Length: 253
Image (cartoon, rainbow, N blue to C red; front, side, top):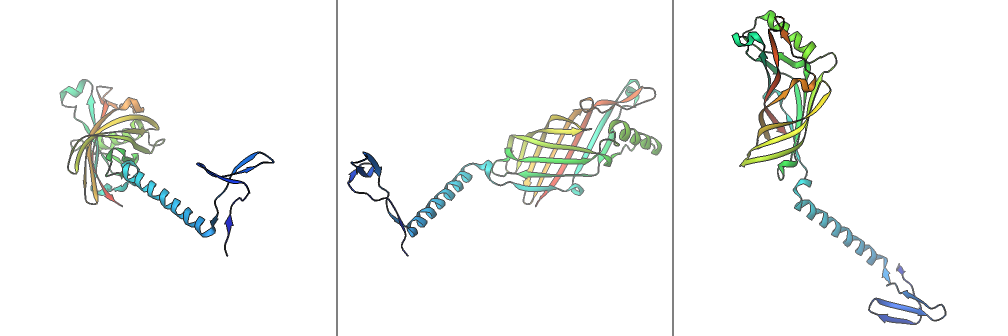
């Protein structure tokens, strides 16, 4: 069945803008519609849809940041995550000033990596604060147990805050050598429910289905409400500076 649409009238004249009709009684001009079959209209609609799809594909190809990122999941069993806290105070200069070495044993995270435009990639990490463990080998078992208890109750306040998290918002690449990159990651660190912006210098390497991120950075404990732990009536206490080092392995999912 043939279907058509259009407007028909007498006194039709041709002009540069198309077919125009003039009604001498009403003094009106009307542009006459072209007549198309239903099949023709459907074909034209399909052509327009294809044109829009091609334009979107071209935009995605020209703007790397819009390309879907590859997701890598952190493999905690293959990774290393440590914290070092130095000592201060009068007795620290007499051999009591070594760092407390703390191992982070439970953490998760992911990296949304954009291989065409790495600087739009995103890094997310979450640490179980209850998994931090004092690893000082020179301490006796009793001293290690006491320092562990002080860290959990005073510095970390585990009864109130169980999670430590980081989420990046920008990556600046400073040097690239093949699959290895050096850069600076900025983002928000949340500790004891206090969030602060931090900068992390790091090395990134992507090989096959694995991504490796290494770095060392420092934060100020007071910025996050972390209490300095003291002993011997204040003659020895932990420093305000906290050093964090990591060697994270993530696998493509």
